[in-house]
Image 1 (cartoon, one colour):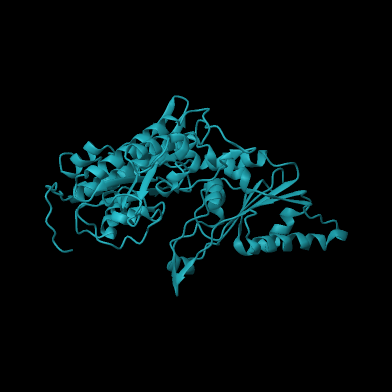
Image 2: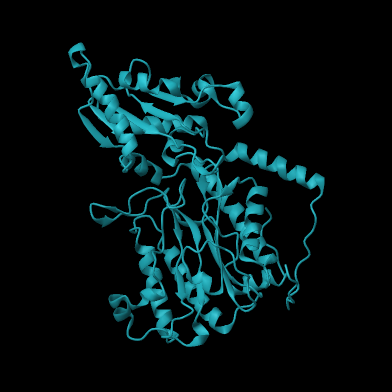
Length: 478
């Protein structure tokens, strides 16, 4: 990187001794024992799901498969979120079958067999014995038994539940198993009469987090907040966007997270106005803001934080004015995260503040009601304010029930992320406003006593950000 002069003093980066590294590793291992989801919780989830199924039901849920990146190279494997939610089983090519009341047990796992020769190449496999003992599964089979055993498990059932999400290959396979039974009707075999989508039942369950899930998410939030704070401390003009991204990935993994929860966004200057900018390929320029949307994944649970801060360490008057509007909008939105309020209340609160701020700054004309009714604000604010958060960064669960925005309930987790984006070529505004993109995002748990912001460990008001970047304070340690 070319050396670029910088007017602010950087805080020295202390080295880490071998003793400190060992302590970090011990702390990560010890902490994992306190926040890992207990095995019996997965069994309880399966039972809760089966309790919702009508009599005579079978539920089939496939796990994820290996995806190829290019010749002889795979994408990093991640288990299907619904499958993991019900099993905690992280190996590829696995299937879960639930058979409430079946004589052979109510849960059946099909997975890859133990294979010492193959494990030399691709790693340890759990195998069938450990699947039963460690994961609370009634019966475990090798994957090659799937096509013979499935028709037997389906026989005599009335209702078949499986993920109906446009997967033609899965539908064909399930129909093949059912057809095998129909062809043996004279021998007394009975195929399921009705097919149903399994996903809405699972997704409604996932919307409400248990105490164990919330603890994992708090730790993920703490790790991610620390990464944002530390990145603010090292950001400087001349860095590439991807170099700043590397700071986040380093801190995620150093603190015990294996990967980010989504593709990290590092948008300097006008790139911050591209909502899903992930190229991260440009140099950070003095005088610009940089918008970073980054969160780690921990035990399959996501954190999702966005902060916007000045590359050179200080906001310009225009940047500060717009930033303060977004910050006040976020505060107003978080105040609406209350049990009983509908899930779109935070968006409405943020929208009112953003529109009034744009009017006050002369970037919009008219009255507040006119701006909201005409949606003239949408060229500066074009997305929603919140989404559910959990195993998926955009987590499962409906936002409307019977056509109405659903009320917030304790145990839900959502983001609050208003923003303003003024395109670099928007000639309807003065040049001094152009190319400024700002978003501020936190993760909030809905509780009976009010909103719990679990990402508060990273600064977001202007004075705190400038102080941190000037080396007058440090963020939370990893």
